[in-house]
Image 1 (spheres, helix red, strand yellow):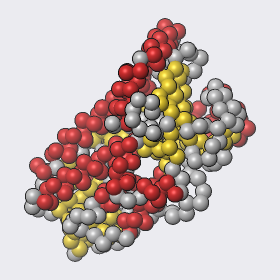
Image 2: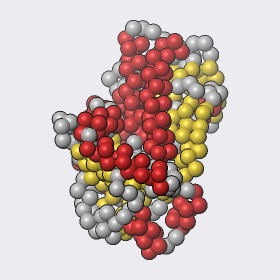
Image 3: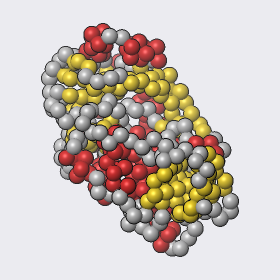
Image 4: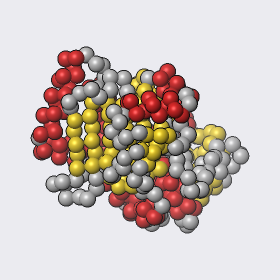
Length: 389
């Protein structure tokens, strides 16, 4: 039987970031990932993330930020939010914040692929391509059996295995969830006018549409939150019909838009694990929480989980404590549950605020946005919270 300090189940962005963050530690790590990422970065992928300044700091610390910049990493220094058929509008810039950008847009497969390449070279990491089969938790150890019959023991098992987490299910951790009643449609589009490094988001009574700038002046990734049937229809219709619907939905803000990639859709559900930690188990990323992808911000929560858990493990290791004991994981659990709940509430609040097209509600929203637009100190506080400054 193989023995390590930490087993990380899931080789996505968050699981790999945790392994990379622990590179300088004396902890031995094992990553279980059945489907290694494709390392072909030649083509654009439709799923992207908007990395805030905290995520940027983490990726710089673990040594992949410069490589991302050399490939495709797009800074944005402006953000505009408005409601369709309304006078309400909010514009955010870096002015007065002491920074030169609000964040960066990066393709998920680039982040994962570069992390994978880095982690593969770490001396304290072993990567096993297999599926987990059985997990037994004992007072002093966790024993994982894989589908290839290999067995591994560890002080701690980290569930970084996504929204339908196998680790969470094995631990019988309850899940609170809320169906948003929407599907997200993602793809890349060419725009007639340049995006000028501005992230844009338009709310309507039954949908939310975000245009996120990519590294070419006229290329954007879109995240379109729609009722399921409408999303399925737009997913399967011909490109001419799709482009027409997209241009109408986006108010022609960047001129005529044309799709340039495949379209993908996925259902949207808010999830919140009752526990983020358990004896011998910790959950990070989507295994612990999922939020509405209003502007691709969800991965930032996961990267903050990584930083918090890594600090907890390093402190406990330095103090010669048992890193898998629940009492030593409680600080991680408490802090991350609070932050995840704040973000879940904020996303739900925004979605609920802009739902419905009752004239009075629409008028109140317009007044609220227009008033906030004039109050720079309020806007500064909003953007600071969003950027985790």
